[in-house]
Image (cartoon, rainbow, N blue to C red; front, top):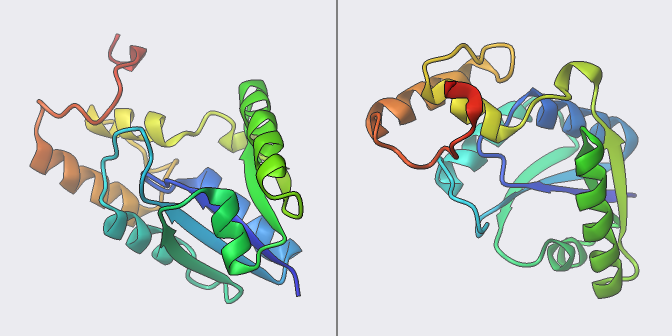
Length: 174
């Protein structure tokens, strides 16, 4: 039985993440979607909120489970008995970053491989940061996230108001 780990912050989960998880679920016996709890970047949703959104997104996939974690990803993969870490690649810059991470992880845990799945064409532009920024400006993210994620974003930004600093400043306001 082949178990793989699909890690991320999923802040929030979007259709690109969901597509990678579904494709991994077709390829492997067991997929553990792991929601990282200690990233360096600022997060919009709490770990519990992110886990709940990811669990809902994974409904109907019997060989997919969702957990939170707070340690090195490669160490967590070893702890749960995963043979590989699944990552999604969107653009060339993703490859460079993921390549460096895969080499570092291989040095730490030689028995755990990294498997990169290329995103589908319609998801190449998707990132959680893009989704959050558009949603923070009352933009329509319905083609990027499921309706319950869109509602969670709307509620979160209503609570935070216009003075929130969770969303990084990019050029979408211009």
